[in-house]
Length: 102
Image (cartoon, rainbow, N blue to C red):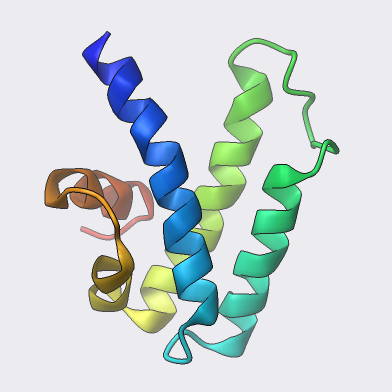
């Protein structure tokens, strides 16, 4: 149950992070555009795999978000991402690991 609550908190934190990064001029223009398109994709009812399919339906959203975040971390650096992260350092470390940063 604890992990479910933690996951429920991460989703809005990621939304806040993506919005803040899309506004930051230190993030290259291409990555900012990807963040904007990602935001539109995540709120759109159109999906690569429909969300009503258990587990896999939400996995495509998470995969696309992780790929975009990986590109942002590589191009702008983990410091910029950390500066905009609204949650705990522990959760930030998990997010950075999922984005491919060691």
